[in-house]
Image (cartoon, rainbow, N blue to C red; front, side):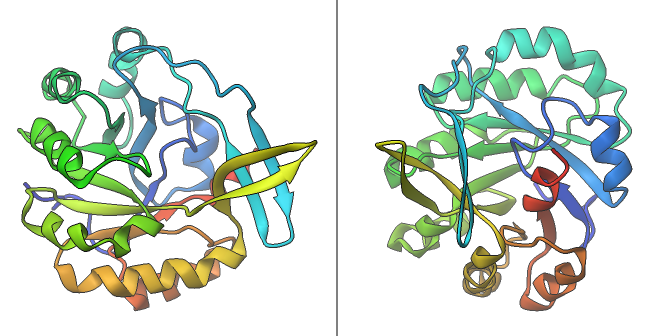
Length: 245
């Protein structure tokens, strides 16, 4: 299953940057958007992290949220009609979890108009065996994008992904820790300082033949063309969307 409706050089947003529906602010600012990726959705509701944070540091900023959401069924009830009438294709982002839950969610998404793909997110400590199980649970009528933290693409098992049935890879931020208010805060790292890391990751993955969506570290639109020259299939909006807040 391919992503043939998204042509090379087009833009998508990253999960967590636009809520559960493509709002006017995002679409007005990024008219290039060719697919909207929802906030992460888990089968059961998730509360915010005990200590949510957005912390500036010399190289950028750290974000920690815990991916709060009301759970699959409440999201479906609230947003199905919104998605079906959206002006661009929708791609729900599913948090990697129990394969049975993934399969139930994907089966439902397959029957909602204007959903064109699903994206599966994984944790830093998810084993390669479990990732393959989650991918198999997601495979069906919709293309599957695997959302990978950049640090994980250098693990040996990643080369096996290219025969797993996924349609694309989206590169997500590195993780780090900052000491603040007498606590160590962990989270995702953003900012212009991450751009060389993104370029290197795209360079590594472009030989796979799979489309690669990337964009961590891009804080100016003028830099997007460099990403395409490096071999990215599409630009995934990260910092530029955070800058709208």
